[in-house]
Image (tube, rainbow, N blue to C red; front, top):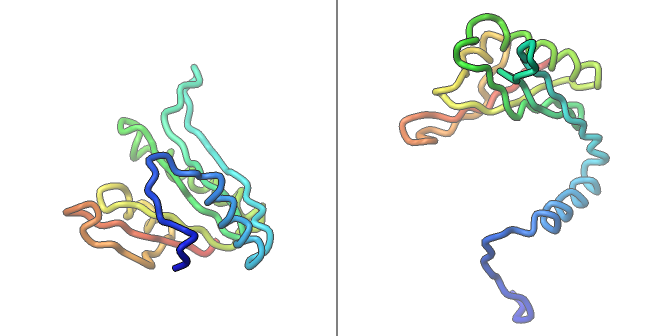
Length: 138
């Protein structure tokens, strides 16, 4: 390593510099990202958010970043409707596949029921549980 450079530790990361650098590199190697956010919500009549799905489409893929339904509303079909609506919109945008990660204490069975398959697993993450990486052809 050249002596004109040094490795330092920072509490506050320079997200813009690092993120911008990797984004530029990815663009050079993989082409335009064309990332678009995607969000569907479950709301009360008073507009209180009681569930939702947040994701994005890019490079012909749909990524599910977050999905949650309030506990007292689970098992009533809201999760399935959120997922179906989001997948349909992703397909309209050109997505051919979807992917996500979830923990063993969350809802891997829910995603399996909707056609997702585990392609990777981290055991004991967090301790006593597993983290699953799942995908589905749309």
